[in-house]
Structures are given as structure tokens and as C-alpha cells.
Length: 63
Image (cartoon, rainbow, N blue to C red; front, side, top):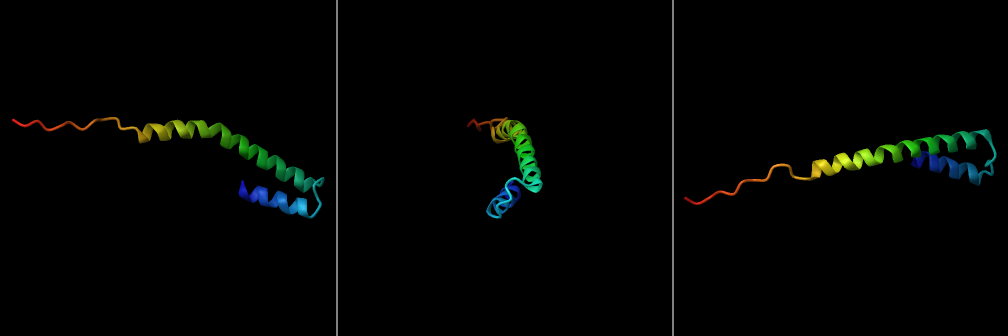
């Protein structure tokens, strides 16, 4: 995303905002952001599963 954003900024500074290259780069950035948004929820759910302890450690009893 940083690469696409920096390229878009460079094209804006060069006043080529209406060019084909700008539109293609913008479309690629938007499609990548859509993929990131889609898979972010799946990633967060699986990360939460990994961070939660599943087995509690048994306490030793004194006998």
C-alpha cells in the first residue's frame, strides 16, 4: 500500500492526475485495500484464538 500511495503522490505532484497510469495505480491500490479489509477480520479472529490460553495449568496440591 505504501508503494501505491507514494506513486499516486508522485503522479499528483507531476500533475498527471487524469492519466491512465494514475487510474491504473489507483485501481490497484483500491483492490488491494479491499483484499486487506476482507482478510483482516479472519486474521484478527485467528490471532485472538492463539492469544487465549486453552489449557489451564493445574495447581499442585500439598499432601
